[in-house]
Image 1 (cartoon, rainbow, N blue to C red):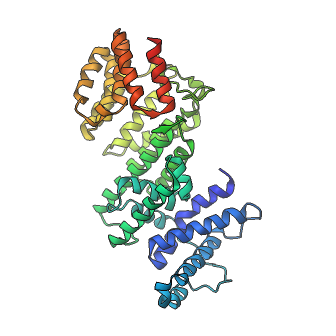
Image 2 (image 1 turned 60 degrees about the vertical axis):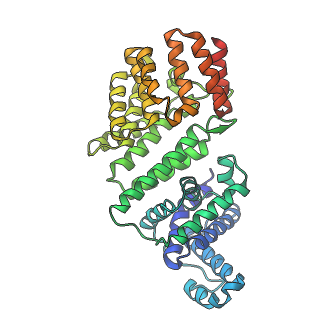
Image 3 (image 1 turned 135 degrees about the horizontal axis):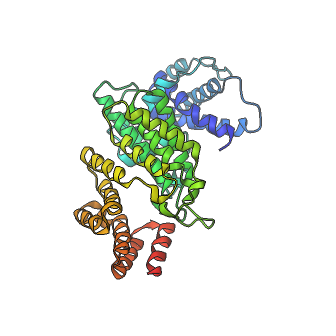
Length: 405
């Protein structure tokens, strides 16, 4: 990412927040900010940055908004009102400082409004808060731009139809909305760290963007332990990224990774965050997952991994936030402690869960069957998992494991 791209993505939520607070009409403001960012990307690459990049973007986006209102015949009678609201001569330069952090948080909350579907919350957050273009989001999720654009448009229409206001919700709605924001960032990071489909195992741009947004959220809410826990989880997980694939891009499982390739700075930062977060109860799911990630990262050798503590943390996590994926991971930890048979028994509780139709359950079952010495059973489960995954690299890995048996 270039210096200009990084600056634009940092300024996007601040400028959009200022426009929405001033004019309302989230969808029109968001379109105007996107156009202003595209103009800045073209002009700032070949010239020095303006004295106040935020003011420059605010001025251009305001003009784009006014032009859009003027160009709409159905709104022609509102032209003078819109121009007056803008307060800008076509050649004027905005001088007001854009309101920053509270607007960014309110914008995140707005993108994660309950009227918007989860998939659209992710897309709208990446576009409005992350500053990604529709084409970039579509490419990241391997869908045509013509598919992604209506999804984002519908999300903005849903927000407008719900009568959502650009302000921070009051408690307890604020806590509920924050939980959705954290989940959206978690989904974005997971898709970047392990792509659900496509030829590449990872999409680092999405993982990096999720971490950037999590850092921003942590700056806005430094005392929220779950925000700190999510950021720590991302950092501790992303620290292993360079060792997850070999020179040919093929998957390297955790136990076989060259740990000297792990990012020690991210591990130190993530560990410090999770230690501080755990010191301020109540303990939430992201803090627990971060603590588990820290135990993996702190083991200099796979044999040094504290599986007893990891299994205990998964048991606590399963109690406070029951989830089939948590049970799946706990089965692995239990197998490392008490043997593969114990892990396999725990997996049987997932046979009626949504995981039964996905690739992860047979993949873990195959691994435990292999450890138990059931080569035929393991081979069949590896092949079943390979048939179900949409990730090319995961499929290659699973078929290679099957062939090796």
